[in-house]
Image 1 (tube, rainbow, N blue to C red):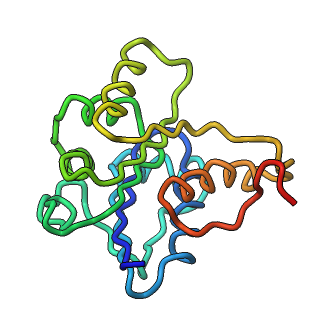
Image 2 (tube, rainbow, N blue to C red):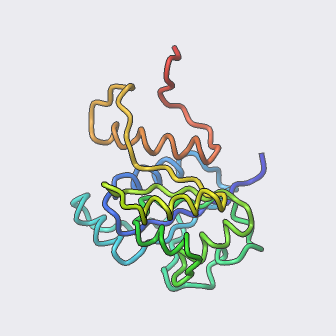
Length: 188
């Protein structure tokens, strides 16, 4: 398989645990020849610290781009990033992507991924949903994106909050076509 180029964007929606587990698993799964880039909204950093009761990490082994950095490689289709995962994805970010509003690096990169017909996975985190949210999800789906709500599964009988959150992250890894050993329904 050719080298992977993945960007993970983290917005200010509740669910920092999903982002943390996703980044940890991607760092384990990707080889040194693969590329992993991160971009966090300003609110994402605050939510991370609040929800996880820890300082926002430095991620010294991964490149982090500022949300205002339109010179990031994945802001252009020529960089050929094959997958973008927005985890968690706020409804505001979803709306801007669905409307084609590229007002920061996250929305610009999502616009690029869609126009290049590459894989965009939005791990939405909101409940209940309004008709506006549903219509925006429809627009993203029609444009080729994947809506993967942060809805954990229970058939693997998770024992901890990390186990529960991992059921969502493992689904995202499957959608990103990454090798992933996880519980599979009705298999031994």
